[in-house]
Image (cartoon, rainbow, N blue to C red; front, side, top):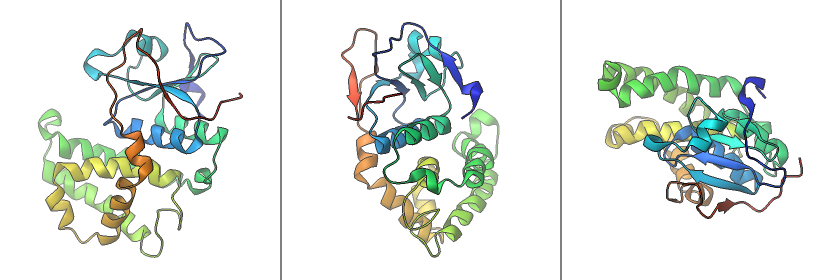
Amino acid sequence: MSARCWRRAGRVTEKADPILYSFRRCPYAMRARLALAVSGLRHERREVKLAAKPPEMIEASPKGTVPVLVLQDGSVIDESLDIMVWALGQHDPDGWLERHDRELVVANDGQFKHDLDRYKYPERHGSDAATHRASALDFLRTLDERLANQDNLCGAAEGLTDAAIFPFVRQFVAVDPEWFAAQPLARLQGWLAHHLASARFAAIMERHAPWQAGDDPVMVGERAWSG
């Protein structure tokens, strides 16, 4: 766990459930919500409107990006992978932490995310979309090769690596679904379709109105944290 990702937030009591500030379509927030869903940890989910971020989130994490998890004692975790590892460290019934390929996730969060952003938003970055799509395709081929003899990226069962990566592949595909469908990546296409069709993914993608102070809490999960 990265110490730099832990801070203290004001006005949080010992008895409060953890609070997750999230944005439905953000792949970083998706991976955090997936891990929390697996852990079953009870927490309050606060949907954030990025154009009007609540001051309570900024107070907890001044960098202003989601996801942000405020714990019962006021500690704050504001990096998505750290949230995943923390949540699964509380309860990991499916053994997700056993299937954590750190190097592959780093490659996803590094070069692939770099190419994804410049493929999806070429006007924002002044980039050539085709060049970055071609570069991203190298990573997708790597994933496809990993799936040659196994259903998931670290073996037969789903793990942290799959949950950490597939939201970003989903975002890449959404730029041009027809182009992606035409690529010789049958194993990767099937893997992505499987995860997108899962009941767990449907549950973490439920729509909620942007949170405002005074709203009734949206509670998720049933397992109390005893830390």
